[in-house]
Length: 365
Image (cartoon, rainbow, N blue to C red):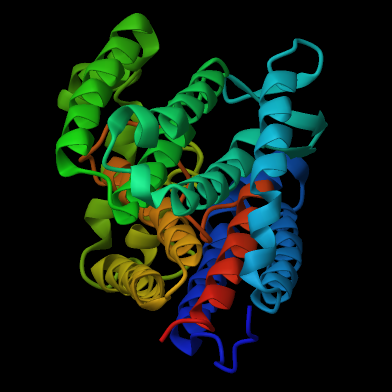
């Protein structure tokens, strides 16, 4: 491939670094109380977030300058490695249980979440597979069944952990790639119906998921149990008003709202910075998603176009799910807010993926 002479999308870089900076500030604000209580160091979480951010930004600039076409040959080997990790994490004594899910590999506080790597590996695989077989996409059996089978297998392994939220993000991003690749709307509609039926079955099969749905419909029916997180999240957002209580002035982070630095960090942001602060963050996400989709639309190479759409799909799906949970529009799923929530493997991996997207922007017209 001819080397690109274009500069990477400066708006995408600015949006990414802006969201990341807000995330570091909010991780400190949301976690200082819990960090001091648990570790005697109010900077415990933010110090680690800054380290992860530094590693992630370095990886982002490295992949931004690496020709994206090189990822094509690693698509299938990377998928095999991620499947191996997903199997490994299910073995008792090897996989680490956190938050009720056996989804981590590592020792103590150091670990990786294989399902996070699978999201990117699946997008790479689908981008390569569908770009190589565009002429068969009109056929459900020859064009869509093979990648859907692999996608279903990955989702099944993630559900064995269980981690419905991460699996749903992977499915959402994968469907974005399949749609952009040119799959028939009738096929996608049929898949949607099957997917809805499958999710209903998964919810009905697990009492705790059913309790989350019940709590979503009426959280005050069980205010100290299944509805507790949703109620405390709304108690944080409501007092924030237009301009918020002020940075660092959250009340809900004083052991009222669970996971204030991860799943519900947007609640703390809305409480402290108000509607204006929350809207500004969402506008930055919209800018990032818009520039990413612009890259997907204007790049000539099908593999690059599908890859860009998939990376944007991961971000967009995760933002929609996290904010939807926080404001009470979706049941609690345990999904973090991209680039903002405290995290290690998820943060560095997402920044690496954004570096690939920035490299793709160098080839857009």
